[in-house]
Length: 151
Image (cartoon, rainbow, N blue to C red; front, side):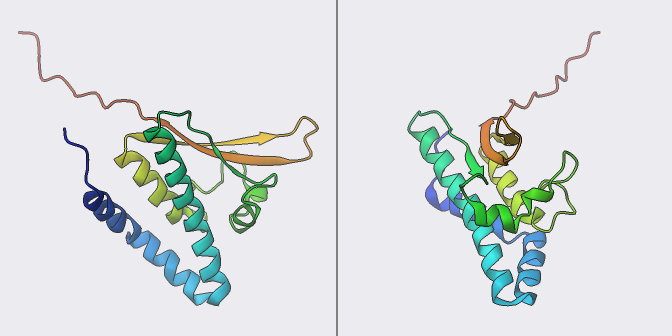
């Protein structure tokens, strides 16, 4: 299978970015004024930067290093996403999270590139500080169901 062209990759990204859920998020951000729009832009830039870093590392054949949210890195985005309120049952992956649409765009990009997103919580040894790390791994290959049946 030939490698995708940049144009085909851009079309996929454009289609994904303008998903209905993201348009709702954009409208909500616009209703919150310049601060809301800036916050959304920073969240989108965080995921775009993560995609660029993951892509570059994969294409270079290097180890994929996670992108940190909190503990001195991407702190503004961590505050916007309110990572301090995340629990095992509630984070950006939860459909009720205000920025879930931004996560869906990232998860769609991952799926289209046969990657699986990984979001994990970490903490220091004293339990005073915690952060999240976003990474990707190769997605499990999709098994094709066999149409063979015993006679």
